Length: 598
Image (cartoon, rainbow, N blue to C red; front, side):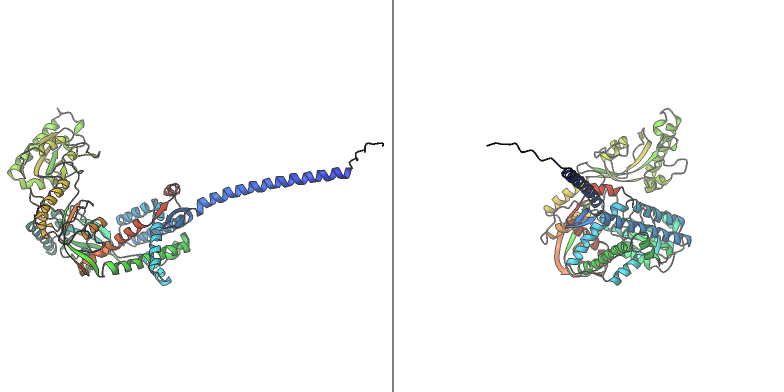
């Protein structure tokens, strides 16, 4: 058999062309797929970036998120509102209804708000979301009409009144540091005397100067409290109501005893009528987003609706309450364990009448001799008549004047302070008074109340003249001593009259009926955890407090107390709601928001 090798078929041109085409298709498909994949990756990056920048939750409240866009939108609304408020106050200024100085105060407040508008918007939305969630669970809702009414409220500046206050603070007689009933009555009588002078025609400014009203205003610091609305909460509610009930400018209120124990009366020097901005909604909506603004207004309307519910329950409603006595001691200016406190009056006689330049003046300079001579003359005059100290300390203009730049306006009276506050640096690392030689002198043993000390040389300031007022244990020691005496059987009210710094100490330490949200949560918890007839554990909340529980009843607060409760109940309830909400934030995004400007 013969075998022949089969000749391989010769490739045709047609088959070659088919292979080339297929290869081209594969290359094209591969390249196209690569493009698609690249585009998908770019799209994913873009989407992720966009999601992070706009839709990613920056915070969450009980599982419900708040996006970055939500915060920017709210900030834009608030910015539009601030700008419109500024325009409204500009209108009032241009119409002569407020002064340029008053306008400047409003302008500064608004500009401060604008500077933190982003972070404030996030906080606002977190609080609003917690409130909306509570409202939904408790069937509290608002109508479209209520939202419209809220928008009108937003665009309204309520009546403003410029208020001047004169007050008299009860003062204990050294070495005692608590006010007696007689001293409390003396302060009331003194305030009545000032009021009679005003009603008798004496100029308010003169009586204000006589009473040193700059020391005892609305909060104890300023007799001129400026333009305020009736919603201002730095005034006791009954006093505030009386001020806004005055029919006309220059009328005066009667005397009111504040929650701080100070007796005050007031006059109104200016009344600015309510101003309604009819273009408010259009202006704010156009500058931001109409829908976003309405959503904010709805949130405010819901808040108002919830407030009505809460106040109906805890202010005017029947609640379980406890009748208590109170013993409170202020935290003071030192740290727990920083030792005894002293109270003094002081004047400084500096070389060339300049405390700040004392260290630059050589001790051989005649100015130091002059300062010493003036200090010795002041000591001689005060030892002859110690009652002159207040007037002499306030004298900052005569040749023999007091050169102290810190305490002259208070008649040289320095609050109760511990030893380390006299030093350059306190135990807590804060700046002290920088008068260590005075410290050594006033903490010496054997001093008596009212004693005028010899001039004390402080090289950093000058010659210091001191009247020693008294010495007492530190606040933490005094509350511990009070607790021990009460636990040993002493009468609570008696110890409170001796130790308590609360305004009610002279009135039997009676705090009265305590209802929910009237006090801080810690104080409330301590009171309601104490058996009837017992004394609470100590509460360290802005001071030291202990309470004796006399009785418990389910009752309605009297009208005067309800007026006070309206100032605090809803705010405390809302703070409790917000603190109990599960809130998380994205720290990285929040940090970026804090410095952003919409």
